[in-house]
Length: 126
Image 1 (cartoon, rainbow, N blue to C red):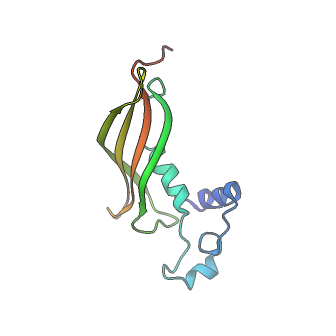
Image 2 (cartoon, one colour; image 1 turned 90 degrees about the horizontal axis):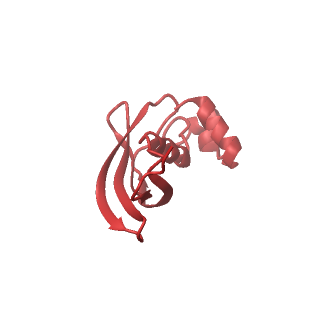
C-alpha cells in the first residue's frame, strides 16, 4: 500500500480523516503513523482474488467485515479465500460465499469478511 494509494483514495472518497492524511497528527495516535483506509484495504483485498468475468454476474454483498489489525503505508497485502457456502439464486444463478482474508507481509490477518458473489450457472461466451 503506497502513499499514492492513500492520497488517491482520500480524493476519490472525500475521506480526509487526519489518521489517513496527516502524518504529524498520526504520530500522536495509538498507531504512531498514518493508517490506510479500511475501505481501500477491502477493495484491494477482494480485487486480488482474480475473478472470471464470464462467470461473475455481480458483487452480491459482504457480511461480518472486520479490520483486525491496521494496515500502514508500505505494507504489502495478499488475499486468501475459502468457499464457505453455495446457494441457488433462481434458474440461471447461484451465490458463492467465501471467507476472505487480507494478510500483510508480517503474516498478520488485517481484514476478514464473508464475501458473496452472484455467479452465472453458464459462462458468457466471448
